[in-house]
Image 1: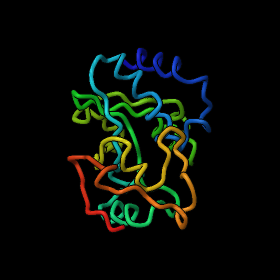
Image 2: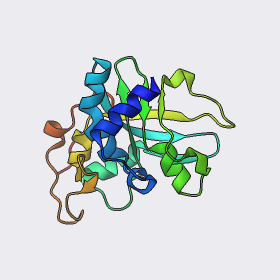
Image 3: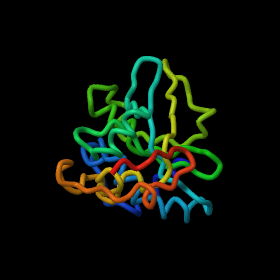
Image 4: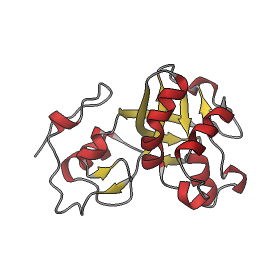
Length: 179
């Protein structure tokens, strides 16, 4: 299955270097989402949340962080991670391993992709745990991030976010708009 997914990524993107992939989970997964749906012939979802193992919180997206970013927009480096979740709940993550490998992790992680059901995640000294918080890109747009590029639209102080009632329609998380 992974070789077929690799081909979808190769057809969607020009050859990418580890630096192109590292910390680019939003833009990579958002842009490949339609190709994943065509390849698997099912609905695929941009999933935003936390990733940890027994030693590390790689991305710790708490409810407080979600509330804060919905109120004030992005103020600093993101504390979130994006991946793709299929209807059958399989996770496709093309960026986490490379990001860890580029940032002082084992170099053999660079270029690795995860495509597996979360119940079957391998235990290689520590088992990764993916915790989904939000589905879709509406949250990202609401906090001032362009999902196509993964870059904040403008500085947080001048960004006026759209109403959360119209932008965030996720059954996984909802919060009242405070603007």
